[in-house]
Image 1 (tube, rainbow, N blue to C red):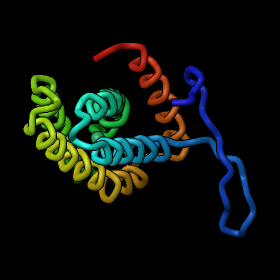
Image 2: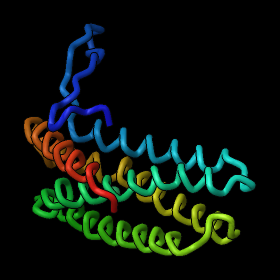
Image 3: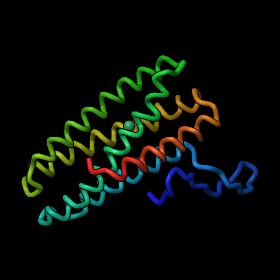
Image 4: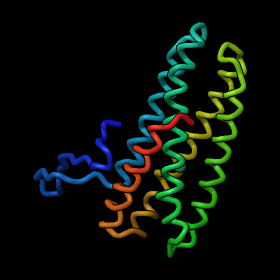
Amino acid sequence: MGHVDGQMETFEQLTRDGRTERRVEDIYDLLTRDHRSMRRLFDQIEAIPEEAPLVRQQVYFVLRKAILDHAEAEEEVVYERLALAEDEELRDMIVEAREEHALIEFVIEEIDDIDPDDDVWSAKIKVLRDLVERHIDDEEALQLPAMRRELAEDENEELAAIFVACKDELAEYDD
Ligand SMILES: [Fe+2]
């Protein structure tokens, strides 16, 4: 979002000695920003009354695309690289993360077949939220720190550039 094709965003960052410096976004910034926007979208859906199912569904469609595009880019760019990690524990995390993505996609397919004014629709959204939040919490707590140890600084920025390009491409298509 807000990206020109493949172009990286920079932002001011406070350094340890209190100076500010401009820094190119790395892959950790991009992943955690996507996670934040998914959490926000779940909050938005829950804030809309159940009496307005079509409005809830409209926000859900935005979330649905955000989840699927994020997961696909993450698999193609990040997981592909981490599958080659030195750290065996990290490689195992990636196997598990791919399985979690598959489960998340399965629940999304189920939601696709349900009417938004059906009670089951809201129940499945809650199940989806639990799955997605647990997955991204684990990713932030375990996988990203292991990834920082694994990858060199320039690789972090390189992966970020490929991740942005991949998401820009996916943004053009309906899932
Ligand atoms: Fe993920």
